Amino acid sequence: MNSQSKERFKEQLLKVMDQKNHWAWRYFSGDQITRDQLKLHFRQEYAVYIRDFPVFLSRIHGKNPPMEVRQDLAANIFEEETGGLTVGKSHPELFLYLMEGLGFKQDEFEDVPLLPASHRYREWLDKITLSGSWVEAAAVTTIFVEGSVKDRQEIDPSLPPDLADVKHKILDHPLVKFHKVDPMYLDLIRAHHTIEGSHRIAAWKMVLNHATTPSYQKKVCQGLEHSLKLWLAYRDGVARACQLAP
Image (tube, rainbow, N blue to C red; front, side):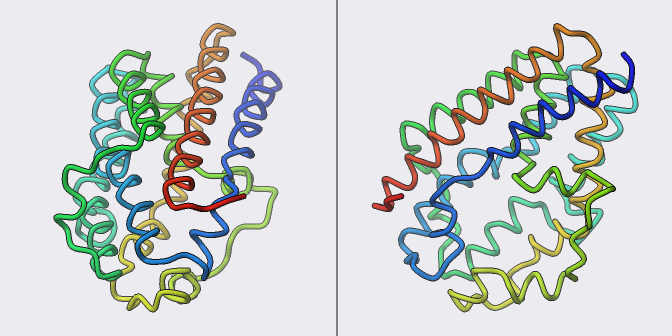
């Protein structure tokens, strides 16, 4: 596979990530959202993918991909499960600590009933990580789920990097600015700031370097497109449950 065809493939995937943006985000990142609405939103996020993200990665690792991919996945799993590369606690634990800062109890995030579209999105994540090839599962999990609409900037060395330091990011975070959460509770943001750049680079590298046939490239593109469709529906469902309107 020559570099030009790899670049075309990469651009196809980036065009999907460019669309990972939902109209309700302006509410959830703004000052017009209530704590009850935030609780509904965060409970769905936790149950759909945050709690079990390390499990998704482990399933992919268990498919026995090439050595360098296993090593990248192992580093990601280690950080997600232990925080051993950053602040010393698992990312699901750090999320619940952040919720504590909002005044929510940990047991409010146990046995969360999923909304219909949330359930469909979660079913897809289980299906692709259990039954899909390792490269399809890695693309959906490490590129789509772990990534964002900012991926184009984060992985493109020709674009200016985000130079804001972690202290500024935390003080400017919506939960601190608008909901007066004490910055001490934002260790999850500190961890992400420390490690996320290397995770994004590793995610794209493993997919671009190993989805090297037209068949695999097509399946990976279809996987991301299907993920986007289900994710947008999932976010629509959460917005409706919060009684938000476009």
